[in-house]
Image (cartoon, rainbow, N blue to C red):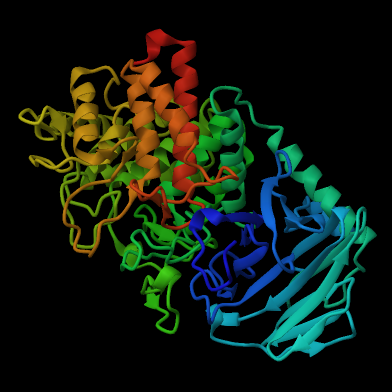
Length: 608
């Protein structure tokens, strides 16, 4: 068993959430990361990034124990089972998730974490430890007793309210409680957050149990929309549930990950804040959810997109806040030691100022899928589509920062050019289907020019491979996406040889690195989960279906025990790296599964 002083593996965490905020829960029953009231707010618990300064909220047995955990069926409620010498208990963790109609009928805090302890067998002695540290651990708030079962703390107009059905003891800057549980007994501990809201809540017990039942029903109804029944169906649905957690319900924006500064190499500087809406990643997510049968999230993202880009239309920024704010200045929290001493800890992300050509292709492709067959489009969407396509037709020859957001400068990225082709191809299809008035001749000419340029200057005959930059000689795993977006047939000899070259140059066993060039940062990052799943799709489309399926199964085994993936993995140790859980990893898993299913059903279409 680990001690609290240990640096827990990223894979040791599960997540709970309500599509507004997310908490990371360890296998030891400790909430070590939570930002309230939204994904990019300052953390209330941040022990994940500093074991000494960061706060946490723990419920676990006193003494020796073993733990196992699982989500409750097709929901985002997390059950951890503790087995001790004296007995067994279950800890159920959730953020209540209700429909808007249900919320109007219930007295609820603005945000809440609900934790239920249930005795299974024997007698188990547990300890509750609550250590809030606001502003990423910078502030230790004053704890105010409001009776034997209530403790509050304030920061400005924000109120944290801890409630329990057992007595709470304030010991300096933390709260403790002891819970003795026997078979069939249930106890509840709840932490609420309010900003300018009511601070009186319903009692625990029946009211808490009702919230649990309603939350279970909410997630089961949502999951029932999933149409997928192919390979890896259980992990595909789990990935969809993760993506739903990352979609900010009040606005429709979809974040890349709920954490900041989990390192891409331990002890290094490759630590970034991913708690924002990357247009590329969000568009990937929309594609995946639409393909599985979830349409509401796609429609909400389209509305968010119109709002977020209104000030800069038709030009886009790379990333925005969940409310569409494009200013995301980057700073370092020097007082935090970082995960496993990996510094700096960053808040914000200055990649928002980059020019990434591929973003336009991803957004237009998502809009194409979302509006397929609808015919009519509203004027705002029409203007957005025309503006984006005109911008791409004008700027496609320019160098850009690329999908991997190199901070060393812009280059003529082949992936960026291909996605510019996708942007124009998607815009042309939308315009023809919906009767959008536009200069289709100009778009078509630019599209054909892009294709000719990529085929002539983006393929290196000596390497028998497409390459990262025009007239270059370096490989890049983003090239695996060329057949996935329809630029070239998967069984085209040039694509088949590119897959072979990428595997030889960038793969270590089943795992694929993004690139092997000097990006101006110290240390070697881990292999990229998304790239490894792209390889599955590429092999399937190249007709190597058995290889693809076998690789897919091995990659599924790389998930943690809850079916969750980080951004990267260290091939030799299998240790997860990077922010967690990562939308792009789960999206790539879904798309690989869908590709395998499609190819299995229609082998003749494998190369299309």
